[in-house]
Image (cartoon, rainbow, N blue to C red; front, side, top):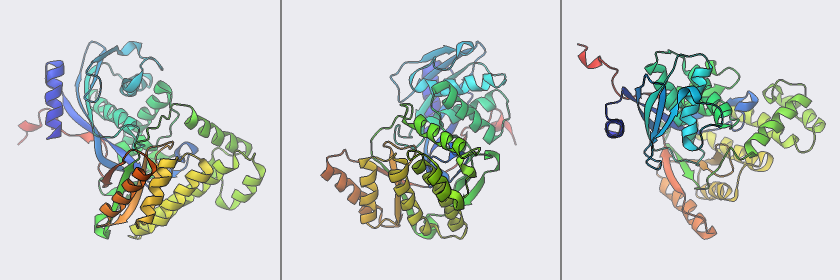
Length: 392
C-alpha cells in the first residue's frame, strides 16, 4: 500500500511514526478554463494521481519539509519567520499554506512533512494545488481546525497567490479538496461553497478520457498568466462590471465593439466558455457524456484563437486525436504547454494514443505521456485516526 510506504519513508527521515498520511489529487478540467478568476464557472474532476503526505505535529515552531521527488535534503523553516517570497522552489507551496493558516488567525505551528507525488509537474494537472491541499487537510486535522472544504481551498489559493506569487483562481484547489469519485465538480467561483457534484459515468457510457501530457512544461509564475488576468480585470472595469462573469451572452457583441482590440478576444473567450460549462453540465445531467466532445473541441479553439494560451504541441495533440476518431479534445490547464484531454470511445484508447505519439515523432517532439483518467475522490486521510483500532 502506497500510504504504508510513505509512512515508512517518514520514519526513516524523521525517526518516528507520522500522526497520519493524507492524500490530495491532481485534477483535469473538463471545461471552464481561465474563468475562475473572472468569478465564472468550471467543471473539473480529480485524478487518481495524487500527492501523499505523511505528517507529524511539532511543538517547537519548526517546519521540516521533504519530498521524495526532491534533491534528498530536508528543508527546515521557522514558522514564525514565514513571509511571502521567503521560500523558493517546491517548498514554497506547503510553507505558504502554513503561513496562510497563521495569517488567517488559526492556531497552527510546526510539523514534519514528507511528500510523495504521482501528479506530473508542469503538465497542467495542478501538482501545486495537490501539494497545497494535502497540507491544508493534514493541518486541519493535526491542529483541530475543523474548516470546511471550501475554506481549506481558499487557504490553499491564498498560499499560491500571496506567498508563491501566482495569481490563480480557486478552481484547482476546490477540485483537489472537494471532488468526489465518479463525479465532476460544477464550480461557481464566486460562491465556491455552493459547488455541486455532477455524475460523470465514463465507463457506464462506453467512454474513456485520455490525458495527453505534451511534456512541454509551463510556468504560470512567468508573468503571462498574470497579464491575462489583468487584461480581464481591465475589461470588466471598462464595461462597468464586477467581473466578466456578469456580462450576459446577449450583450457580448455590444461589449466587444466597445472594448480595445487587445481585450475583446479575452472577453469573448470568458463569456463563451461560461456558456460551454452550462451546456456541459446539462449534457452530463441528461446522461449524455458523449455530447461533451464538440464542447471540448470548441473550448480548445477559443483558448487557441482568442485567449492564445495554446502552443504547437497542444494544438498538434488535439488535431491528431480528432483525426484518430476522438469525440472531442482540448488543452486543459493554464496553458503555455501542459496537457490535452481527449474523449474517446472505449476500445479506441490505443488508436488515439498511437496517432498522437506518431504525430509528435513526425514533428520532432518528445513522445507524450498518455494516461486514462477516471473521476477520483478529493483530499482525504488515508490512515485510520489515532485510537480507531481500539474501537469495537
